[in-house]
Image (cartoon, rainbow, N blue to C red; front, side):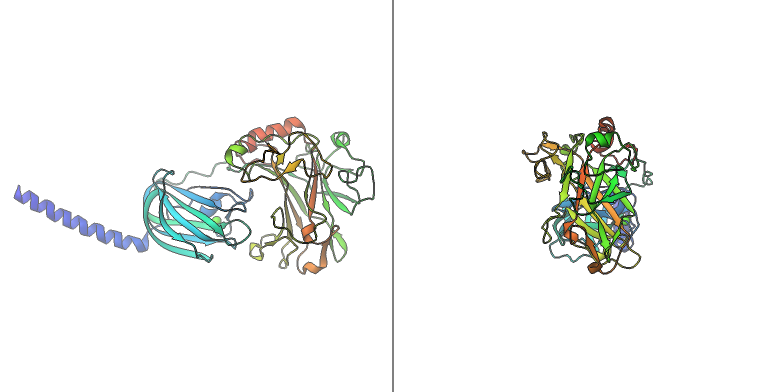
Length: 421
Ligand SMILES: [Ca+2]
């Protein structure tokens, strides 16, 4: 017995020494265990910035959140792991206050790192924790935009030894879209000045062809469209953009329909945009930038140039981009209103207000203009960049809109122009 006991004691000592040494060595050399694993987040800014972009190992793709606090992003390591290091590669939109937490079940969390004075860039954090799930909780944004990570990397020992599941065709973003190029220009506005040709500033029209001051739902439904899909007979229009007083039209007009911006349970009960609905987003009469992020300008493939409510100076080779988000809460009654706005509202605290109780898809218009450089050479027919606005006259066939809301928006599936994943 005694001999066996001594042997066991020696074995314990040996094993203990081995474990201590292994743990000490492992801290410096622990492998990256988060890449390609399943990542989820509290929100995404748009279809091009899903949570998975933060764990794909590509420093040119990023996750970005909605423009509010707090937000979170987490990765499922596939199995429990000991975690020694977390690397954050922030885009310009970083969080100054955040925590890192781990969890064994994805429900109860243990904080392993906390800061309120972060400065963005690349942050290499030495931590000590364990769990299957690792999450960053951001509580304060450094900019008016959301928070955005090029990469969220977890190093440690453990996690799943199985290779990450292959990326399937289904992306967990609530979206379908219509790709509608520029169609024509007219100083007409069938919502604001119906029946009054020439009464408006110059507009650039997308989608439905032959739209003018006399256009109504019937003429849209009996007309044709340049959209892909061509069954989208809706009309979309914006004030024409001028460079050195010459009109410049966008090279692409993408009209996303999104289920984001509200809580998941609200997304799950989104209704179709009603046939004939008219919406105006943005403010043509604005005399200064407002406090919202409804309309914004940025530079294609040059995120470092930032974003602004007025035109920004995009580097040579880039293009000026306009993003415009339409209101996504309907009063459930009116297809239009005297000021063309009060029948619609933006969400409050990620839900539709009681005055506008019907959640509908959020229309996000993304236009790319082939101009860059000095913003002083650029203007809109309505004025400076912060007067950007958009008009939408819905003429999607009801069954086609219903199918997309059912198959893409409510179940949070990224669909293309055909309304399929
Ligand atoms: Ca990435």
